[in-house]
Length: 64
Image (cartoon, rainbow, N blue to C red):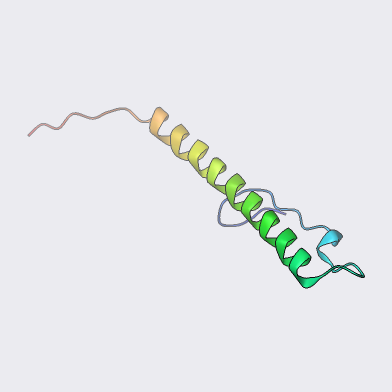
């Protein structure tokens, strides 16, 4: 599945489910880590996309 906003693949696996004996803090810590990693990947993809667009464009001089 692709993340619609960034076009970055985001695969959710079954490990997101709470495991027996796992504390709330541990689950939140893991969720935060996954969220940060996903956002980092999205930012990288956007930067590559922006760079590709700016490299492909030519500078136009103004006539004024």
